[in-house]
Image (cartoon, rainbow, N blue to C red; front, side, top):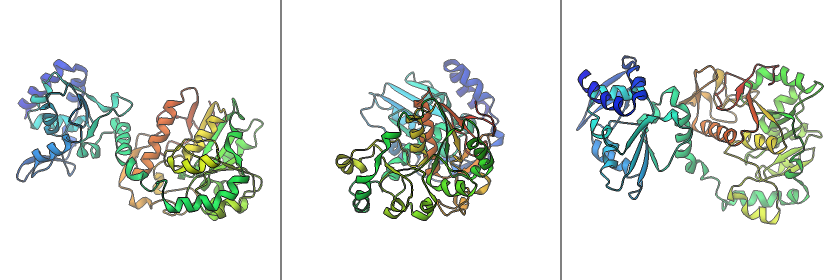
Length: 431
């Protein structure tokens, strides 16, 4: 095996010397690896097979076919056992194949066990760790085993790939011809007609600091801080998502506004009867009862989804960004109001402490934390349980932050998911 490794790594050293140093530093003894034999042979790492043990060639052909035949450039996330690389490089029109390593230790293991020179030597190949690049590039294929085994350094790329691969499935319920949506719009039309437009809030908080408050578990540790900030001489703008409103009210905190977008949002979950004069910004998908019982002024908004195309023509209103979660339009509202900084509270995208939400019983609003089968890194660099939908929401926030470099973003907790681009600060200290 050492001879195979030296044969492989020599090519990498010649072509990508800095990467070769990283690969040499990997300790493959930390991996639970073994050979698995069926009709073919493969490698199992931490009980994940790197390829099929029965039909490796057919599997590789099927995976390579996910890249359009006419593509001259392709991106492959994961290295597998080199089979997919071989299939793609058989194409005469393939000019560039960019291979992104998802786990450097696993790749080192493969280099010890098998000859990979056949594709490493090809001048059309570029090899690098996925972490070197901020965004997923297309056209691409992501090798499933490599996604599951992704190393911590490549976690952002893994999150983006998961989000991209599941986005179409997650958007299926949001069909503009969904009869339930059409019925909900019909029910809410009388309210939309009389309610105000969210654009009335745009540019009304220029230069202010804003707190966007989600209902993740770490909100529990910030009630005192938020109350202190609200009672200060120069309070920040406070925008709460719907399910954070009730716990905030119960701790004496009255946000400046609440935002809700969820089709399943009820008056009870929203806390409509306790709203007083607080404004509500809403997408007209939430229940009619929740809107009607809201006591403060209401402001209608839409997203760019084609779900709102028809009603938007009849009742034009401003747009807010969303990527599946109410936290996204809440952040976008703060930015469009002119905030110079946005501090995130309860934006955990995970189950810190084995909890799903602040205030709400575990599993009431999302699947119970016991159902979590995935993970993200928290602010301490530790793995914390999560779910694909939460990871998708995290990706959406990180993309938004990258697109708004003029705004400073902060994260109030190290226990929830690390949010790339949001700087941590201790409670009581705002930069």
